[in-house]
Length: 148
Image 1 (cartoon, rainbow, N blue to C red):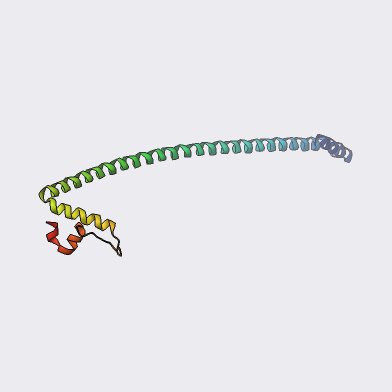
Image 2: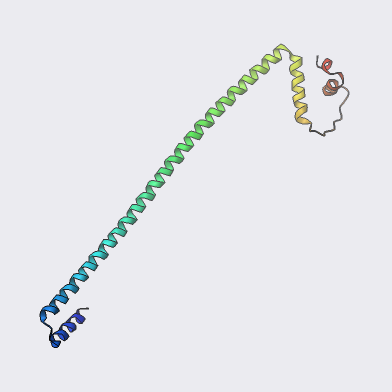
């Protein structure tokens, strides 16, 4: 580029242009190059800062996700503990109620347990072959008298 400027200056001098015009053109070209170089530097710095900010944002997002996951696990763990506690309390209450029912009327309790068992064993269209001394057969044939 310097050679072209020099040649342009020689041609201008030969064509009768003053040296002032040539020097002015060279100064303008120099300023233009400086401005372009400065602009490229600013753009490069801005791009580097953009990438830095993006990395910081991604890092912060990872930290936030990790914290949210930790809090989620804590909440689920506390909920599971509470559910297990309530289930245990419910089971204890059910056992207490069964115990009271059994102590008041052992035959009724036995009948209810037998009926629950049969309900779980037999489906809608189940065929059963029962022996003559089967509790279920007695209940089906004799009704409430068999439970006593």
